[in-house]
Length: 411
Image (cartoon, rainbow, N blue to C red):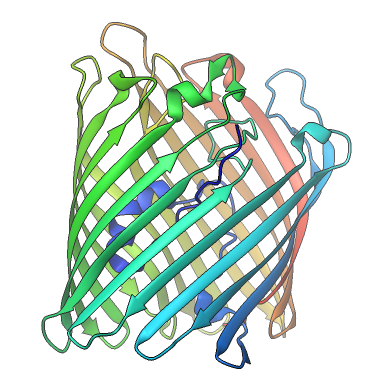
């Protein structure tokens, strides 16, 4: 079965609050996305183009399949070109972004893949009312995080729409509706579990967000969202969620940049055997420049995520990562990084014993700014997994890899 799919990204501050945990990358992985306003811009007639090219993960992976007893190593690299195209006819701003990843492994052809994604959005400026719509789609075999080690083909997609209403010079109200689908190929399995059966789902969400521009460089949003997630093949996993989350956004023009959100989620299972969850959620990526030579970056997340396990329907993911870069000479910096993540599994009532898996990541390397928009990074990384649910899920992995990126401006 081959269908188009979706790689979710946030659409404005309102979508950031709702999707923070779902769209966040695995904390043990270095971020690969570049904000659109950091890309080089080219103008061709009425079109504004923002291209980027990355040659990433060039090196040897010591444990390609994350095996616990017989690790296998291989040489790998990823080629990833993408482009964002903008057009503004009158009061309408339209954006189209498309990207492709070519993932290569020298020995293990099964791990090779070609991944595609695209996003299309439009927003109209009607003075006090600004309606918007966006569609996101992808078909990819990239790992979704630390839980599933297989590179399984899946087709996520999402459609969202709504409007922003300007209430005053620095305040606004945003109403958003979103429908997202996650779908795996029928043949995809991991450790004997059919991924389509346990993970194919549809989520419908409605959100209201109150936005305030606190300063020219800082904005605060408070979002309240209601979600419903449905599994056609395993309806006992169905759930409702209520989210309440403030979001702070810091402009890329300031010393402190990024977003940070700490809120509350009430997760209610429709089936009585699915355990409920009520508690803290969090998501953020922050960066700060200190003294002109030091750059500190952090990423953190806490939320409920569905599991592929048949008797362990979901886990609470919590973790964070911290990295520090120190400028040495012009264009050259040294970097160190450490991260920790836990997955606290929850079981259906009376069916299994739950436990907590832990991930530890640390590493370091060097970065060199070859030109204002061209950067090379060399990184050594070590990853270790401990499992309380299944000892055969434990593994270690170490990699030394390089990455060359064009389309990333210096800061």
